[in-house]
Amino acid sequence: MRRRATVLGIATTTFVLVLVSAVLIVLLGTTQAPNVYGLRGSPAVFALVLTLVGAAIALRQPRNSVGWIFLVSGMFAGLLEAANDYASYALAEGADTLPGREWAVWLTQLSVPLVVGPSLTYLLLIFPNGQLPSARWRPVAWYTAGAIVALTAAWTLLFTPIGYADLVLPNPVSLGLDINLDQRGQSIITQILLGPAAILCAAAFVHRFRRSQGVERQQLKWVAYAAVITLAVFLLPASSPPFSCWCSPTGGSSRGDGDPPSGTGPSRSVSLRPRWRWLQVPCTERRLLPIPCLRCLWK
Image (cartoon, rainbow, N blue to C red; front, side, top):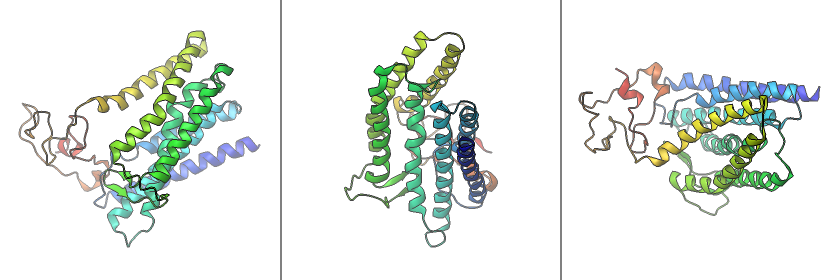
């Protein structure tokens, strides 16, 4: 009974956060919302998927830690989307209209490590039965948990300013150490903390895969496919030279002339219609891939 109440409470919290995000996204369509990376609403979709899968596992196998990791990560993914949308809406409306935008950005800083960290590290260590491959991997589990806690503390208590794209604000909970790092510096710290843990957890996953058979082996294969796609998404931009979109002020192709590839016509800057503005992707020199933003694709 207590297990069902816990699952229901976490799932309800996630669904409420997703609903709040949907309302804020609709409101953002009527304003000049600040730029964010990616598509608005994608963390909310991720939250729903994780919550549904995690609830199914936690109700059937309550001792399996995989289900609870999915549930908690899904809840923080919903918090990430809701806080990000509120901060964007508060910034678009002005400082005197809606309070707490610094705290909303701080909540995004809290949510990102708790969504990405367990998914890329600890989940590989205990999947699919929620147990370590053997007792020898216990130090790896402790190190991974410590790395996630340290990363969360750095993102929420040490870094200043906090945020990304146009949502960069002072840290309201800074400890006064004045660690002023840009997004690249914060990314390096993240890789230093999570990189070794991810490698060790991946080694445990490979060790478990080599000893598995039957249904367990098929489950591990699907997770391996998902991990390869995730790594490709994260590593491809990091290994590519900086590009910007064709309609950005600084140009946008690797040739540096600001024109789209041959055969596509002159460069243009097209604004999204108001009802589609919530899909807007930033068009600045910070883009990492030589692809057009939605403003270029929309006629």
